Amino acid sequence: MRNRISWLLVVSFFVLTFSSGCANFQERMKNINLTKVVPTLLGAGIGAAADEKKRWRGGAIGAAAGFLAGMTLEDMMKRATEEAAKTGEKVSYEDDKGNKVEAVPKAVKGVENCSEVTRTVTIDGKKEVSSEKICEVKTTKYIY
Image 1 (cartoon, rainbow, N blue to C red):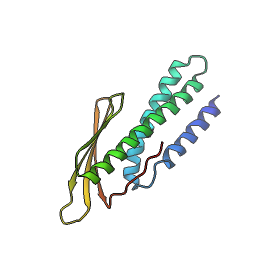
Image 2: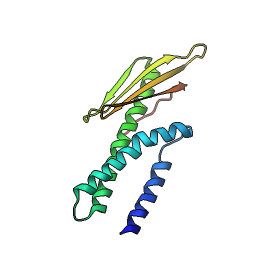
Image 3: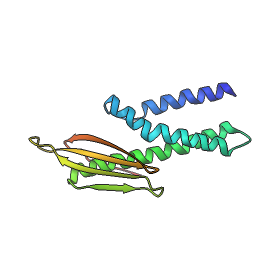
Image 4: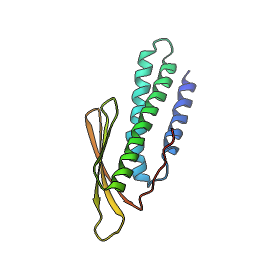
């Protein structure tokens, strides 16, 4: 039983670490904590508490659900940032749980086609602000 939990934790760590895309390390680690680790751990804790017979099963199912919720939030952050940089207007997204992402662009003086986008992410009433400089706005095609 303990070996399974240890194995699950090790695999989860590597999945969370290496599934974050190509950003600078500090920004990537910040996004990993905000959008992957916190929801995954919360989901695992709630799932383990809910399944009284096999807590590891509840924890695994809850962790998977939390990870998917975190990926949804990360997608909202990416879309809001790209759209704000492209349109030059404030962009806001909110999910059905009340989590909210706002992106406000500001033109960078002296540099053409560059914006500094300030993101405000609100999760369960807690706000976190970050900014990102975007030049050459890339259009991402989303297919679902």
